[in-house]
Image 1 (cartoon, one colour):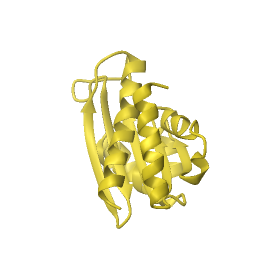
Image 2: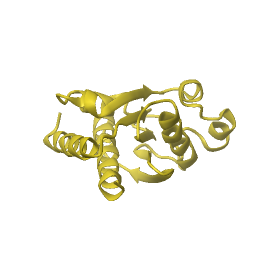
Image 3: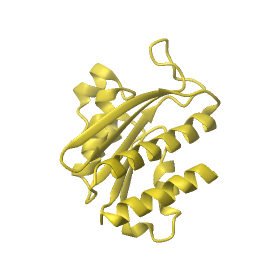
Length: 164
């Protein structure tokens, strides 16, 4: 685990534990990497609730309740998809916060509209708060995925600190 990711996990643990809150992660292109780095932390059972690795569209539908029509209209790498994934993770867990990530890590799979490195994020939390963001990362598959994990954790930490 990189030093930056370790720092983010440590800070997130403090933030969530101070509020007696828990996290659920809904992941696609990161393949469970967010859940892995969170649960690598000693004591993470106090603040990490669950992880959903929903790599296929069918898994997004089955495990998170993402509508097939939404995926057909917008694709899995889209703002509506990650917002639905984040909402689904909250609805299907005992978490107070969720994060969702879906993107194109490469080296294939990109298009002119959604090139390799395109990653969408969403963060959902208390009082029906829901935010999303798109990033365009550079590098190989590993680099895109690592940057995605960092961005997902940074975003959640910012929202957790901002919205007690």
